[in-house]
Length: 190
Image (cartoon, rainbow, N blue to C red; front, side):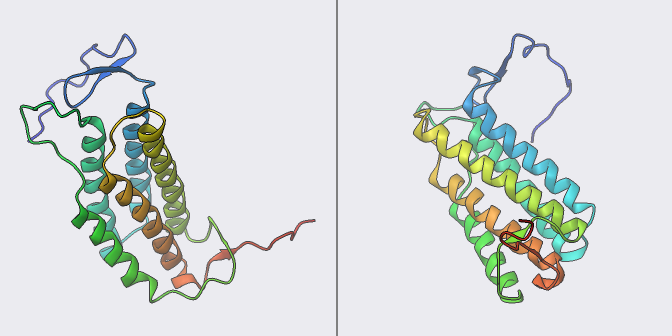
């Protein structure tokens, strides 16, 4: 169990932070940016939960917990070196769970007739915001692997990709199962 007795340590006053493996990195590091964006996504989901009830709230709570797993995964680089603890990482069953939720909710939605603007009910608007933050987290994770040359698990990338899809479907569901979606009208204001 994680135990935080002291909130400030002063160790980050020099602009660095500690990763899960004890390594110090700049707070501007791509890995730190990746898991920081996952943390931001989690906070946006917390806002969405202010408007959620029942099953939707429970699903968002499970996702928030998974996002801490994802943050731990990203905060502990896979170096091949042994760690004094079991490394926490996103696994395929977490991705599969998101896919089941997408399939379950999607069958109830009105077919798409246009692109959907990020609007509608307060819950839908917050879920759309969360979706965009999830997409940014995904881009940062991919860049960490491609540009930064660091290992990012494929399950973690699949998870955040599916999560953004699920958040889109949930936003539509929150807009009266798609009937209340605000649709893009190309060139409407020309």
